[in-house]
Length: 169
Ligand SMILES: Cc1cc2nc3c(=O)[nH]c(=O)nc-3n(C[C@H](O)[C@H](O)[C@H](O)COP(=O)(O)O)c2cc1C
Image 1 (cartoon, helix red, strand yellow):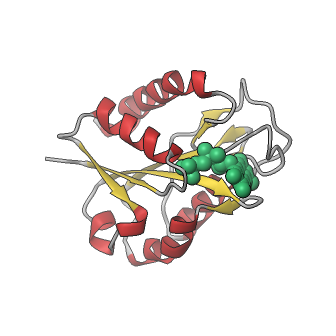
Image 2 (image 1 turned 120 degrees about the horizontal axis):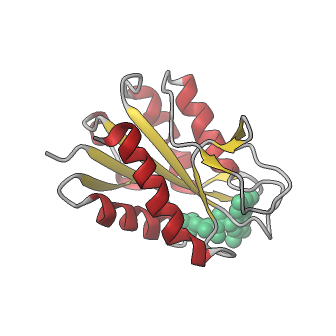
């Protein structure tokens, strides 16, 4: 039975790329891909485990499709779900709002009663500020396709392995 929903919103395809990589690594029999622009309430409600991917646009804004569908999260009972976030951003061009959308999504989820996990260390990034930082860690996996593409596969593999150890089993 498929147990993991990978819900993503992407404007130029970077978040899609890593959502697809995660599906491959987790296995297609376990993980479904859900484009948030097409998502309905049931698409989120039926998975016990959710991985949510979001990119940051404007100056710290959520990706457009996520922006249009954010209210959907309030319609789903998220309290018992295991939820982990990843965020795409550009730390060189937007050092003061790096992956802010992941921080916004985290806050919305907490307001909905969820307790997202999958925090990720800030080591090896260079930026000035981000609303996606809590207790000196990112609230989820931060990926920078514009400047650190070479690090991303390893980051995704390590993060997923930690999730497997924590809660995907
Ligand atoms: C106009 C524009 C605004 C952006 N604003 C931010 C930002 O505020 N913070 C950030 O971390 N990245 C920002 N980015 C970088 C994107 O988040 C990054 O390129 C990301 O990989 C895009 O992912 P997507 O193709 O899945 O939407 C911006 C990029 C553009 C072109």
